[in-house]
Image (cartoon, rainbow, N blue to C red; front, side):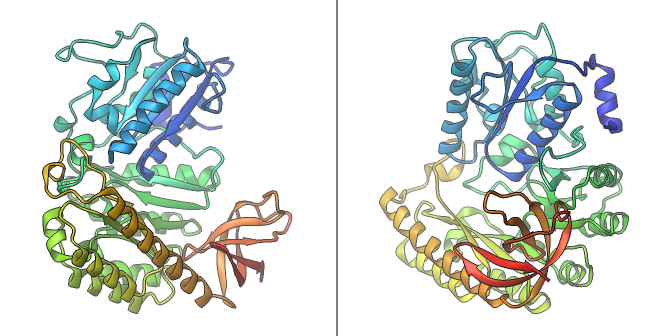
Length: 460
């Protein structure tokens, strides 16, 4: 396998041993950005000759990429550290991610073998940290410097991760941006990820070509706030500039956006999506609430009416596009009327699916001190209603495409039931009987019938 220039630079500072007998296990919590970063770690470990192991299989090195977006995610992060300690008390444990960034003192309290902390701004050094000998043990006094842990607030640039591929995956995630400037009242992410920082256009292009070289048929453009891509670069560039550059350089690779704020859905973007064969017709837009009063207290920067306008424009220009929506239920002070406004807005829009999350009180955010907090049983009832609506929306959208032919990227051609699995251009999960050589290819599939939460089709 050919190493990319960033990995060659990394390897120059470390001894590369293709016969390294060590094993490594990587566990990931949270968002697609974390998934992208963990794939980079795995790729680099394999480049260094290590063998990837399942998390409970007793590895020599454990890497835990944590999440802090909710209190539950923070608890799960701590549980993974304990699982790693039980699986192999002698293992080296490397903890990174948002929980490690915002609450390092909680990790330093763990008993047992020393834990190496790697900050969110230092993830390009994680493999080096995992393989290095003689690191200062944790816990350390808070004011002492650590070689792989910086104050995220001082970061002004985004360092490219050195991975060249996504092991075992047909789709690859390209992290082009990190951090956020919005400071929504419920969100800890700006404190964990810092301010918005972008990968240079040249680095994004180079990584895209490496993914293509390694056979990834689809690349998902991802970040914490993708719509702010390039605004911090000198000279500034835009997300449109990035997309046009990448799609022209890799015309036979499918590109998909992970998520965009409603205010960043422009006619120009939608027309580019509608007029370009390799820009997939799929949008994921966070709504969070249909109540303008709740949106104001959330510090969101749009109204329900503005959200409706964006969705209707997208549906006008992209009739077959999948449109996904995030909803946050049970925000402090959310009344029955506020929830009903959210439900009615989502029910009345031509969207494809809903991702529904109950609000979780997160220490360190303004919303944590807001009153009244919505009772857990009320949140559960509201979540259930919206998830039922999600099922109806998905089924209606999938049924509307039956009888039509869609290009499908084959992601798994040897499933136990003999059916291949993949996603259509407009993000419909499809299963069908493949030809012998269809793996990792894009094939035309006619959608025939709905089954549970996916569609059965046949190669056209």
